[in-house]
Image (cartoon, rainbow, N blue to C red):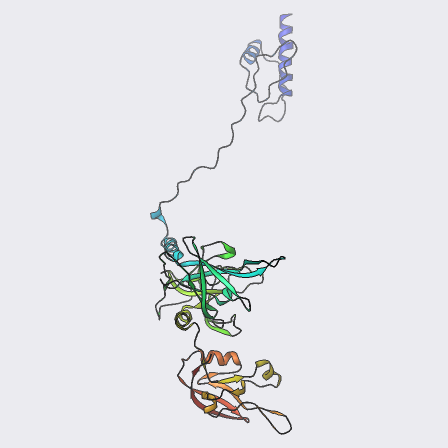
Length: 411
């Protein structure tokens, strides 16, 4: 009778094992009832289970215990960062350039007066961009399109690297070069001017290009790239081509306009001006006004409030009208009285007795530079200084001719 009870207990344990499958087991294996000795060991030292079985009303299996819950997963292992001495030389150079040039980079805001519904005058932001400190006297250089207020009267403020903001006045600018100069008012802190690339300094495709600016109003943002091309001709804000533009893939976005483009020596090599993009954001094709142009134009604006424009003393016919009659070159409408063109005998448009308009002289070249339109003429003359003598190549009554004259400063 005792043996029959032991056999019954063993069968119950086997059935219980089938109902509560141990971890790693996929099915219950049926086996012959163990010997009485094996049964005692199985009950007195049961294998651990993840899920405790239900305890019967009589507490038959009160000795079985549930396995402990699994521990929580740990965070990713800590990795020791390399020491500053382990930085790549190029990486450390970018850091050094930012530390050197960031204090010379500023945030420019244009403000305009508007009137609300009650006709009260309010000053509101009308545009913003970047600029850089030119000298310790408080002159700040930026793009002309950043500060151009059109017919409205604008006021300006400049936020320095110290986060102090000062009012500024517009000294002048040149829309054809997209360059303007502001003067800080009542600035009471020392200024850090940008370091300008020396005249004749190297500029090669592939060299490092570093841009610092305020894209989307985020101040002192650095982006890096290379000089992608040099000598680009891109139509600028003034409607004429800006020559020798620098192309870069350093990211330039709205708000970067007027900021410095730097080489690995923290020298100014250009002023970030425009991008080619279908979305309005950087597409890896940005353009900067070359430092040679900035170096030539800025001192003139500081000294005179304007830029010298070497000219012939003529009034050209708009290109659209010349194109309608198939003329290649610049048609002269009239000459300025007392100017070099008038003194050299250059002719403008005339009218016969019947009222028909007759062509005068057509400019087709300045020295060795061909002239097909006003843009060509402007950039040909821009290569010279006021007072230089040039050969003006003309077509007069269908016959090529030329005259020599000295350039004057056009207002």
